[in-house]
Length: 82
Image (cartoon, rainbow, N blue to C red):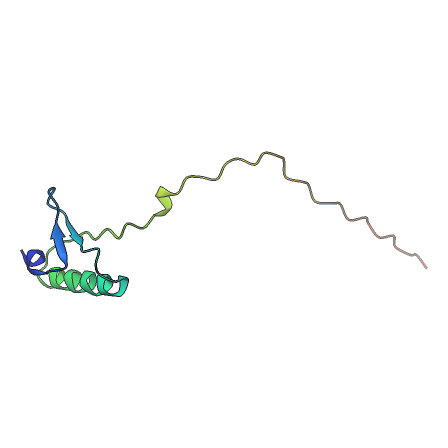
């Protein structure tokens, strides 16, 4: 497999491939883009997990502890009659 030929990519015991910790963030992005383009060119489906939180990973906000204050009513202006 092509991923085994890249020195900065390591295979885990579960068969996953991970980038070397010695790479800078810029180097990691370059490697990931190269791998994705290579696999796409071979019509191989791939899944790249960047380890970033998605909206589904973020817990909902806790409920408000106090009720929201109602807006202050604006007094009506009096109309003058002539």
